[in-house]
Amino acid sequence: MQSTHVRVHRSGENLARTDQLAWRIAACAADPVEVDGTVTEMIINRVIDNAAVAAASLTRDPVVAARAQALAHPRSRGGAGSTVFGLPGDTRLSPEWAAWANGVAVRELDYHDTFLAAEYSHPGDNIPPIVAVAQHLAEARGLTGRELVRGIATGYEVQIDLARSISLHKHKIDHVAHLGPSAAAGIGTLLGLDPDTIFQAVGQALHTTTATRQSRKGEISSWKAHAPAFAGKMAVEAVDRAMRGQTSPTPIYEGEDGVIAWLLDGPDAGYDVALPAAGEAKRAILDSYTKEHSAEYQAQALIDLARKLHREHPEILRPGAIASIVIHTSHHTHNVIGSGANDPQKYDPRASRETLDHSIPYIFTVALQDGAWHHVDSYRPERAGRADTVALWTTVSTSEDPEWTRRYHSTDPAEKAFGGRVEITLTDGTRLVDELAVADAHPLGARPFVRADYVAKFRLLAGTVLEPGEIDRFLHLAERLLELSSTELGELTLVARPGIVDPRPTPNGIF
Image (cartoon, rainbow, N blue to C red; front, side, top):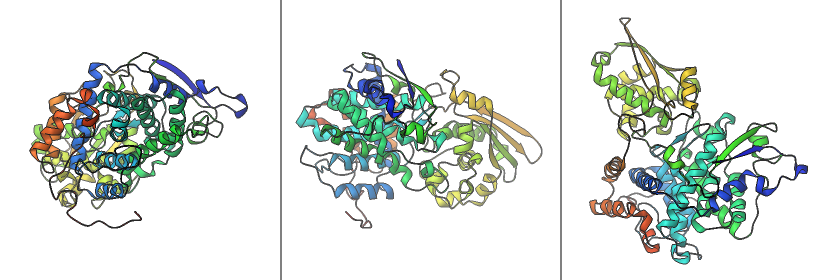
């Protein structure tokens, strides 16, 4: 890896373009290095994973609305158009709107892959915009599965490398500010663009995708699912503008009125961002991990721990048996999804699904009582409002533990942890203590996800909305991803059973 020191420069310093972080990202994207077999296999896993969670969300309101918006934008003149999950394969729409609709579908259930470091991210959000552009231009540019795999590898690499080094949430900037540049870089790799064009696209994508974290605070709204889709859509548009010779704010990261100076650590800040050197394989996807459960990633290990306690200690499940539950965990978990967020909505049984999947007190309570977690049933209003659940829920709090914070930020994979230690005090004074560092499905967990698990997740989530033959067709196509022809790229979509995607009218908008 080649490290770049990034700091704020006064305009008079005339920082050379080739010394700017956006250029280093562009050079990485333009490097013709091939993708190795292990990375290709993981990309296939994540394409299947994205499709699984998108299938499960096809009838949810944000996805219905985003799909309706996309349907108002038929394919543009420049290519064949792109497919949208759920619609017939011959329905082709403008690529930026297909990226939008598919991005919302992938993100809606908060159920796909994650990478957590200085910043947190869902790098699978790169896939919808890169696939949309690949489908649109496949025939015109002779794109195949090989180019798509290379583009996705770049998207993952750039987003994960930025997340390792630059914290956004520290300054209440939403994490999709790393996604705009990474998706633009991935599209640049896909299309074989030159570094200068990718440089302009990266700058534009960053400039248009910086927003505050209020989308993940308080009463969390449906915009949480739309935010990464918006970043993907902006990345497509940024690449289009850059290909037409249009330029971006420069230097976007390092300028005295740029992102670092005014949105992040300020004019005296410095970061060291490592990206693959020329000729070095892009392997960052292997450091990311997917979700077995539909909830914020920091909840994954705690759901598994709650299930374990349910199995091993049935005596604590009697009504009134528990006096209090304290979850000792990292700063991030405590302050984002725990009681440290100081969001009363995290204890409100009438809260939105988006809010509840960012409430570890709620999630731990339900997983402990049920010994299970379900992407729909665990969030139903009647489940959240159950009297015994509300009573137990109010006893649950989180506390920051410096050791769990240290492990959260550790760069040693053997130490890095996203779980916590749970202390349960019973009404008779008995204390029960247990802990879990990583989720069962984590690469270092009890049951690491492998291809069979990704396939099983897809079959489970898609089973109610796709015909069995369509499930098999998609899996066969996805598992041959590297070998797909230009024509087959256009078939990399999901066609819903009749009546699934359009059974009810939706409110009209401008389009």
